[in-house]
Each structure stands twice: as structure tokens, then as C-alpha cells.
Image (cartoon, rainbow, N blue to C red; front, side, top):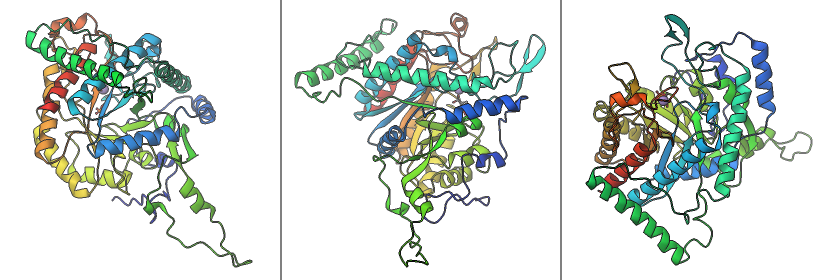
Length: 490
Ligand code: PEP
Ligand code: MN
């Protein structure tokens, strides 16, 4: 295990872990500012600011992900590739909430089980890049690394430490609006939803989608009639936040030692193994403060409910995995064509030594041409470890291509193909797909080709607005949900 000692014998106390222990490890995607005093000032401010999310919410999500890992619920995660500070306004947030809600209803219909909604939002501001520099107007400039680090403006790509604090406030304002809208009935299922299926020109698909929408509408009316929503369950839904935990200085500053909430049941293995110390003066048991703290508190990343490690930063002996192994939040790990089976088992043992069910979501992203070869090996390797994970398919990141004119895009058909293969392969291997991870937006952008609108490579210019990877637009995202729901019912 590369000399790791992730836990002590009681399994919870990370001897050599603390929120900054990642700093002594090698790191991918490093960040070097040229004004350390300004960085220190921003980090001090962040350490002082209140949590954005709480341990109670984090454990509620962990409980839901436990259900997903056991096959009793399905996980829907989606949002922008690179969230901009500019997306922090009501219209953009409303359309993403609405889209995730509609997709989740379709998936509930398809899988006949609850859906856990996780937005890539309110903090998805840091991007890993394949190259630190890019060419612009014939000169080399630093790549855009996400709003938390630098501006997209090619004339002004210097890293700006003030952006760390701006990220916090945009994240908090976004989540504040999400919470306010949810508690004001934006997700009230008594209100009719506009499904906008007019673009579907294929009559067969149009009938298929309309049937699903009518069936959902009927179920909701029925529940209302029989009073099945007396506890107000149809008035609001849970929506959690997530982002890639890439910029560790930011994540560290929002990592807090907090009291475990009452909805966290302490498993038996957490009880202190040592006998209480005896006081030399009184002969009575001394209170061992460290044991007490182990039992009642833990380190929580309070910047989001869920964080994931990207494909470029998941080396078992590097900084990101070191940071991730110490937090109580549920976490994701991207798994791609370069992930070895050895790395996979080692990673699970490092970040989840007690093998807690659903603590880790494995986000597979191979590409439509590679999923059939790689996924079965990974499923088998994980099953040998005895870990119960959430298997989530990200059909976006292995399917990026360039058009003849050099525009970065993804075909709807390839995305759906990887997703259907994943569903099928899991079934064949005696496993099951627990969720999907998508890059999407509620707006009518033209970034991915295909889908019922039939977008072609030449159409991409009309509303190509992404600042990083191409996203499914509202119609494509909803259509993908319809197709997944259809295959879940098969
Ligand atoms: C992403 O999710 O935007 C991303 C960069 O993915 P990956 O780490 O899988 O390449
Ligand atoms: Mn992306």
C-alpha cells in the first residue's frame, strides 16, 4: 500500500491525517500563485467563514447513497462542466433545478425506485486541464482553469487569489437560492410541468415520450386524489450539491472538525478498542479526550455535500487521495481507461478502510468503444475487494471528439451507447448500474450533436456557449432520461 497507514486499529482515527496532510505529497494539476501573501489572506478569510453545508445534510446524502449502493435507489448527477460565477442568477439556476427534477421523475418511472438528485453546481469552479498553456492569436497563454483560479478572458489569464473568496460567495448564493426555491414550492409536483416535447419529430418517439409523461402525470394525480401526500412529500424534493475537489487549498480551508449529527449511526467498529486509562491519583478512569473526540467529531468538507476526484488526480500516493481519505463526505472517484485494477482496489482501501456501503461512488468514463472491455474487469476487481460501491456511469468524458473545423463536441448516440452498454454489462456481471453523471444545462445550447433535434456538426456554432466541455441541452438531457428509463423497464 505504498507505506500508507490510513487508519488506526479502530478504523476511524486517521493518525497521520489532517486537513493539510496532502501538502506533503506530490500533486497533479499544481497551482502556483505569484502573490502568496494575497493567497494567505484569502485562505484565512475562508477559514473564518461559516460552513456552506452541514454534517446533518451530508449524512442524509450518505444514507441515500447507501440505498443506491444496495440497489434501492438511483443516483442522478448533472450540471455544467465548468460552472461560471456568471451562472449565479435566478434563470440559470431555475432551469437546472427544473431539468434535474424532470429527469428524476422520468428515472423514477423507469427504475421504479427513488432518485437521489445531485447537482454539479454551487462550487464546480475548478477545472483540470490537459495542458497548462494554450495558443491564442499565435501566442502562448495560460489555459483557463475555472473561475476559482483565473478568468476566461484570454487577455487576463493570471491566477487571481481573490477568486478563492469569490468562489465561496457564489457557491453560497447559488445554494441559498436553490434552498429558497425548493422551500417555496419550485419542485411542487402538484403544479403541471412543461415538458416541451414539440421538437421530437419522429412519431414513434413522440408517442413513447408522451406516454411516459402522461403516466407520470396520472400517478401524481392519483396520489393527490387518495391523499398520499398528506405529509407534504409532493411539495418539495432534496437536491444536493457536488463539485470536483481539485483545488485542495480551497477544500482544506472549508474542512472543519465538527460534531457528528444524530443521523449518523456509529457502526460498532468505531468504538474505542483501548481500555480507559486509570488515573494514578484516584484509581478512577480518566477521560481520554482523544478517544472522546474520535467518537463525537469528524472532519467534514463543508463546501459541498459530495466531492469527487478527477481522472487526472486520482494517483493512490498523491495529494488528492490523501486529502479525500480523511473526510466524512460521500466521495466519487473517476475511473477511466488508464485506471488499473490494482489501483482501483488500492484506492478503495485507502479512502474507505472500513468498507462503508455507498461511501464511494465509482464514476466510470471509458468511451463507447472501451466500456465493454474495461468495465467487466473493474466490476470483478471491486467485487473481490468486498467493497460495496455506487457504480455510476459518466458517458460524457470518454466520448469527446473534434469536428472537422476543430470544435469540441460529443454525439448523443455515443453518449447513449456507453450508457446502455454500462447498464447491460452490469446486469451481465451480476452487478447493477446505480446512477448517471452528466454534463448538462437547462439552456437551449448547441454543444453536443444528435438527439431528436438532429443537431449536426455544422449547427454547433449557433449557441456554443460552454467554457470547457460540451453539455447536453435541456432537450437532449431529458431525452437521455427517457431512453434510460425505457431500457430500465425492458
Ligand atoms: C469533469 O468531470 O469535468 C472532468 C474533467 O472529468 P474527468 O476527470 O473524468 O476527465
Ligand atoms: Mn467536463
